[in-house]
Image (cartoon, rainbow, N blue to C red):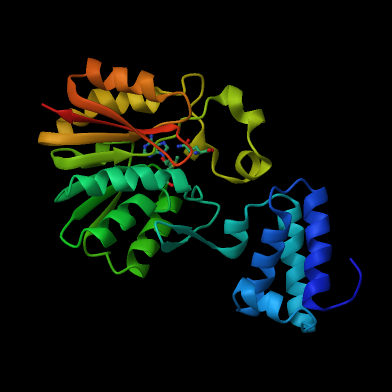
Length: 281
Ligand code: SAM
Ligand code: GLN
């Protein structure tokens, strides 16, 4: 990279390198990295193309660019991601929240529950978005990963809902023995090991494997949750599961076979069946 330190030159060069590295949105990523370092919005970069950046900003920009060139997710480099119009702290301990998971949040909010369990909470994005948008709700969130739960608790604190969201470590529903909820929601791992190579390097090489992969049976978590969740649902309560592309029909059948009624599939913005919900009795 040449030495010119103007905003426009830095972005052009970074875009070029990111594109060569195979990054999907090279210009956008270059702009976001630099805007974040300068503490400005992206519009500022266009308004001040000839502004020179300081040596400190230049060096830090190079460090961040090198990380992104290794295909580290932008969210880990920035330490944050947006989900349901809220900002979440993210580290490599947690999956980066996905926009399609907002469909699951919508599904939960639509039931106006008083109590919710979020199984495999990761960054806490579902639990916290639900708590922020339902001022009376109480949420219990579980994860197998202590590292993820630390970040989730930080996010609950950050959004002022720590008093209504409880985090518990353990295997799926096991930490919730004896408790029943209006909604049990989960975005469990659902990527078959055989799909690993088809994923982007950002996902495959940087995100926590235990958050994504399920071994040979991609629906193993959906099977367990549809068999066990009724022990934790109040009469008329809802089980709501996020699914991968092409999995919705099979998961709907699992819920029907387990005795759930009003089973329905909700699509994401791309028209892909993304959330399967069903009511227990
Ligand atoms: N809920 C977050 C979201 O939507 O972004 C994270 C979802 S991520 C696909 C799945 C999460 O389940 C990970 O945080 C992972 O640590 C957790 N997990 C994996 N196996 C688990 C298990 N047996 N019991 C509880 N949590 C588990
Ligand atoms: N949606 C994620 C992906 O595209 C997978 C999340 C999951 O396994 N629940 O990689």
